[in-house]
Structure formats: C-alpha cells, structure tokens
Image 1 (tube, rainbow over the protein chains, first blue to last red):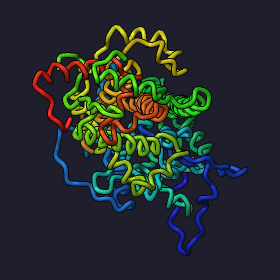
Image 2: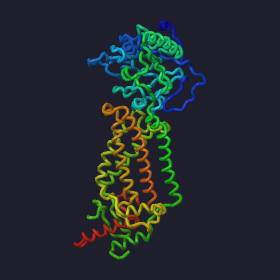
Image 3: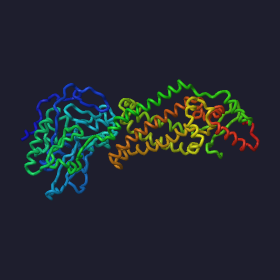
Image 4: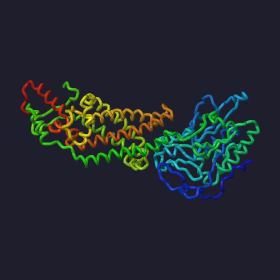
Length: 313
Length: 233
C-alpha cells in the first residue's frame, strides 16, 4: 500500500529546488549542477480511476484557474479538450475488448507528461521560457513566454495550450510549487482512490510493478507501465490494463518521440541556414575585393550620347 | 512600347551625360515599402529562428511584440510585392539571351560585359532575383498563414504546422540569400542605386549593362518623335 499524501507544513519551509537546479533551459546553453536531484514522478493508475474528476477540480482550485461553463457534447469528457485553464482532463473512452466482448470504460487523466527529453523545450525560441529541473519537472516561465506556439509543435503529446487572454502557453506544472515544499501535486492529493500517486520515480516504478503483477493476476495479461523510451521516459507515468495498445486510451501515443521534423527544424536547419546566409554575405565581400567595382567608363557614356544623337556608337 | 521589357515611365533624355528614366516614383515607393518590410521580416524572423539572435526582439519591443507583429509585416510585404510583381513581371520574362548570359556567368562575375549579349531591361541575374523572390514570397505567405496561430490555429493539424514551419524557415533562408545577392549586385555595379533612389541612370550605365533596352528606348523615342521635338528636350 501507498502511504497517504502528506499534509502541508505548518511552518514555512525553504523550497527544495529552484533556479540552481536547472537541467535544461529553452534557447539557452546552461551548465547543469554536478549533482542531480532525485527524480520525481506522478503515477496514474488507470485501473484504479473511478472518473470522479476530483483531480480536475483540485487542479483548477490550486492553480486558481477558471474554466468557462461549457456545453454537453455527448461524452463525460468535459471540457472536450485541454484548454489554457484546464491543465488536466479526464478523457473517457468506451472500448469493447474484442477478446472478451466486454465494454471497458477507460478513463485516462490527460496532461503534461514531463518528458525527460521535452519536445516543447527543444522547440521554444524564447530563452528561459521553458525550464526543466533536475528532478524532472518541466515548467513554463510565463514572464519569458512570447506566445509563439512552437511548444505546441514540439510536444509529442499535444499538451500546451496558448491563452487568448495573455498569449502565453499553459500546461500542467506538476505543481512544482507544491512539490518544492514536500507536497504532492494537487490532483494526487485530491484523488480518493490513490489512482494518482506521487513520489520518487524509482518508488513509483516499484509501486507500478506491484500493480501490474496484481492486474495480471486478474486476467489483464497485457497490463504494464507506460514510461515511453522515445522521449527517454516521462515523469508522469501510467499503469495501463492494456499497455500493448496505449492508443485505445483516448489516443495516447503508442511510441511518442519528438517529431523528426521538429528535430530537423531546430537542429540541422538552424546551423545550415546560418551557414548558408553567412557564406552568401562573405562571398559578396570576397567578390568585391577580388573583382572590384563594376564601373561605367567614359567610353560607355560617349557611346550612349552618340546613340541618342543617331550616330553610330 | 512594343518591346516586352519597356515599362511605363521608361525614357531617355539626350544630353551630357545622357539620362535614362528607369523607375517611376510609384515604382520606387512600392519597391522601398517592400524592401523595408523584407528587412523587418528578416530581423524579426531571425530573432525567433536562432537563440543567438533572440536579442533582436528588443528592436520590436520584446518577444511578444515580435511574435505579434511579424505576420502583419508579412501581409504588408505580400500586398506590396504583389503590386511590384504586376509592374515588373513582363520585363522579367525569360529570353534567349538570358541562357547565353548564364553560360557566361564567369564573364559576368569578372565584369567582362563586352563578352555578353546585349540585354533588355533586366539581365538573367535580375530575373533570377525577381522570380526567386516571387516564388519564395508565395511559399512564405502560405506557410506563414499556417503558422499564424492567433487567427488560423484551428484550420490545420499540428503535423501540418510542423511541416509549414520548417518550410517557412528554409524559404526564409533562401529569400535572405536572394536578398544578399540583390543588395550586393546594387553595390557592386556602380550607378545602379540611382535607379531606385532618383529613378534614373546615366546613358553610359544603360549602354554598358542593358544595351538592348537603351536601343529600344532610343528607337521608340525616334518613332514617337515624328512630330518636332520641343526645345526643353
């Protein structure tokens, strides 16, 4: 069994991590600290989720977000998609298991996966608008965000959303402010079944292994942990009953990775592009130095004068 | 005005030296609006292209302003260039002498213009710049609209947006190179700048670089001047 979520400290405590613990910083070259903090992770056990949406409510409340009142559109999933104000969203899928012919209600809590290799950060052009702490949390620094939406293109999970109010990108912070003072993320704290757990990545993997064993003993032979290697693992992981086909869970990517187009755009294009433009400019300078200016001669002027006078130049 | 490369406003004035009208005031204003837009687009675009040039966003009032204003400048450029295109496309049609020019590009670079065929209002290099700009601006406006999330986010998929932005980057690199060629040629070939500043060049310049065009201008002046010339000319 998991221990319960800790209660808040009664006295102020210093933050456990901060700017000195950056592993990566968008559009910047930084030297990460010699020692990495213990990696944290959130484990979402889909098999234990009852779809109560306490996590969604807790997220709105902790982050002081105000979602617009929406409309019913035929699904429990509400709002229908992540928004700048909904960092997390329960996605409900009604899936008929072809082997058993049973209807299975798959409820996946969607949100930022806090990739070890974050595509959003790689795509971001604004220095310091996206940071990754050594404990694995990927956070947006809104003061530096320019609202270009490159993170939306970089993300393999389609998570960031650009606000129409302030033109900045928003997503789950893994409650970095709570985690910094030893608290669990608000969603995990609110979850009544501990379908959302939080701890070190190692502990979460251990706990997941126990859960997978349990699920297998109950007939879910393909149960497993979702910690996709294509993005070098994530700091939000799922326990899935059917880990062999993640995409049945409302389109969870089977093999997420940063798009090769984004890699090419942010890699070779940048260097080759700067090189080609630089070469063109330098070639111009050299040509001028070697060939010299192309000047009109007095004979050219004389010829033109003759031509206009109707003489043979 | 029968030759393909004679544009409205082109004319020749005998004298010492001979002066040749090359661009009307309208064409020049049109050109410079396009030019300023292109430079602003290149600066703001490069600022978001590579972190090493991000500091350039300061010229536009910061990152948010740069992101917001870049597409609007793009719209200005597109409209302005479209008008320029209508003005110039005919005189930029590819002709036989352009192929000869290309095969002798070595002589072009060495300034041996006596070894080149007589040319119309534009040489093959200028035509390359014109058509290169036209094509790349089309690519840039199309991919730019896909990237303009503020208004067009919902119309395309994220995968399409990824393709659009890399194509936009590559086309931008291309157009900056074309621009470097354009500006360099204007600096290298002395007497060219006046065409776009004062609107005229000397007869010697036209004789040296665009002799066919000059001959056409002189000929059309003669045919128009069946009536006696006014003294002011």
